[in-house]
Length: 337
Image 1 (cartoon, rainbow, N blue to C red):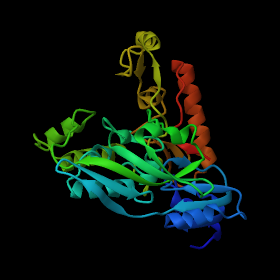
Image 2: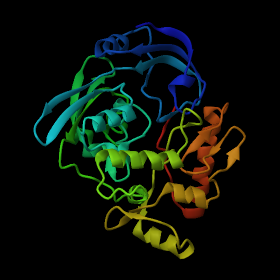
Image 3: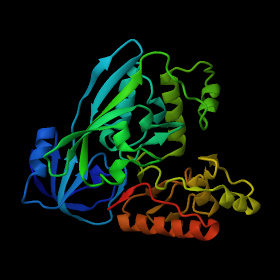
Image 4: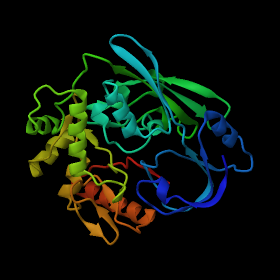
């Protein structure tokens, strides 16, 4: 473990924003993390995982701590279920593939989501009808002063739509070091009804899909719609899907007959932010070295050389336009630093 000076963070964030960290250290054990958090010479610290859910808008005048804890292990199992613990620095998609290779079901619909295991509970990642909370057992998290290693249960985490205790009252107070999952070993709950998964399976003549088939279908769908961060800088979905009242939705229907929605409660519906952004004319729009992806309006992209401030200003323009056209406020899903 070595503290480095003046390190560019372009390799450590999927947007590919080239800001400078005044100090940088990569930690590979909980003990190293405790040690670094206890350093009094660096009062300002920034925790960095997979860098997939952040937009860096300026140089970081702090100690950037790259959480690089690795390891996956089976904690317990019976005939039907298995409990698996993964360290925070494990790549999320590689963890999903590890589970599928072992025929452990539950995370296959979450294939190809960028980022690391440790950041997954923070925003309760979700895709294609499945959320992290559906397979979550517990997580361990270290207090920001490095003194307390606490176990958070599912109840403790207070999961919501792209939300958790780690984005609310525990925000900035804990660093997740590992996550424990409860997965199926047999009688897998195959979820093929959401989105275009069933159509993808049908195209491949798969009538009785396995968890691997579901994963492959999700990967194919995501690759057809979303840019690879290694090729075009992005952070996946930039905005959350807004939830509005049914009354508001019915008013919008009068002018926008094709507006889609998904029920949330008796009085609320969720409207796809991507549809709103596309309807507002932003899909595929390019502003020099940055813009909105041509296949998915939810994704803001850095074509190379854009600054974080460029991306941020574009996001604000989109938010302002959506508010003017639809009277809907859309919220950024990524953390803006």
